[in-house]
Amino acid sequence: MTAIGVDVGGTSVRAGVVDAHGSVLDTARGSTPSGEAELEDVICSTIETLRREHEVSAVGLAVAGFIGNDRRSVMFAPHLAWRAAPVADRIASRIGLPVVLEHDANAAALAEYHFGALRGARVGLLIAIGTGIGGALLIDGKLFRGAHGVAPELGHLRLMPGGRPCPCGKSGCWERYCSGTALSATAVDLLSRHPSSTLVREAARDSRALTGRKVAAAAREGDPVALLAMADLAKWLGEGLALVADVYDPELIVIAGGVSESGPLFLDDARDRYRAVVTGAGHRPLARLRIGHLGDDAGLVGAALACGLG
Ligand SMILES: [Zn+2]
Image (tube, rainbow, N blue to C red):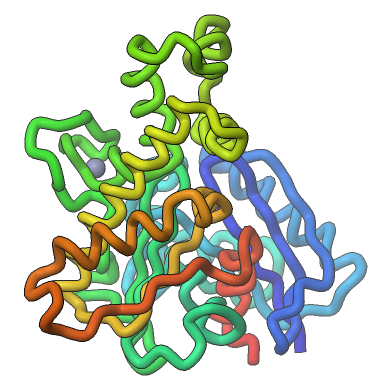
């Protein structure tokens, strides 16, 4: 049995044929357009490309946004065009296959639970750190969605009242200090004090081009500003983990998303911070902290699982 999982992100749409073992047999990709109808066109065309070569039984879409509890509609997605949109039914009527929606962090958590780093965790938390932060909570292998389907929305917990403005409309949200976007913002804040940094030359050309990915690459090469920005991210990751551990008391926390590729640069510092500031430090069992195993494929593999694969 195979299904198609589609990871619908703010910059690209990535679809894959997934088998019951979680293996990705084939992929197709498109760019995310800004319009609603155009986005659905791109999703359908990546699905049809894969169906020419593969027989599949269903399609799952992993979406960075608020998904209705019935997993048929997108209520709100800050980086996508959909607002209260019956996306599953629209796509299903065009392709003639069952379609299910899932929040992208929930999809990644399902994939890591069945095939990766969350396997066996009774209470497991996934923190996906990319452009922002997405969170997912699995209890005995079942996703916790809250009363209306939007929990746990961890990235917009306010860690710094009056802090950096956030596209969600608030300020000082966790993801403003702990994300790819935050790496870039922190590096720009630090540049004036560190003229020897290679990032200064990069920013002099175009500060908007100083992406989190570039800061992470510079940190791997030892750039002082990039390393300080990475240390700041580690501090805020540890602070946020301590809060969510107080709320959920997980046994395992998996860090996923694009920033997790730089795990060796921040994970130990984040763990130290978390251990130091969690309530009752030294007098309670702590969650293990590790990097996800499935990388970029977690969202589409989890989307395929969400539509009943396996
Ligand atoms: Zn926010």
